[in-house]
Length: 140
Ligand SMILES: [Zn+2]
Ligand SMILES: [Zn+2]
Image (cartoon, rainbow, N blue to C red; front, side, top):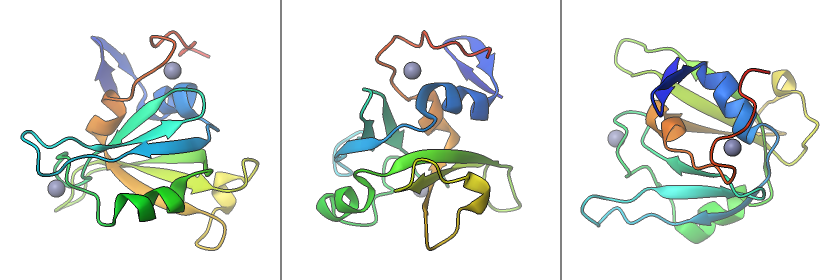
């Protein structure tokens, strides 16, 4: 469960309501040198954005590669699924985003050949932005 704007949601249902099946259109590169650092955002075709925060500490320093390279890797991919990763000994809880070029791929059939994984901090989910003001039906 995560708290968003004072109400609690199941994190996977929340993500699915906003971003399930969405296609990545663009990224907004962050600035890790800024103070505070700004995260890189994924921009989806339907207007949602999702900041990529370090899965370990929630800070905005996760970009391991050049923005151009990262954009090339993720642009056009569909967000076909998510997994909640419970906390482990030395790692906090987090979210795995499952990305694929095939919007109809069953996330259960996802593997290294047909999809990519991106790990983000739970805070990323709380900071997603919604073009509908968060009005999606989160109950269904
Ligand atoms: Zn939304
Ligand atoms: Zn970190």
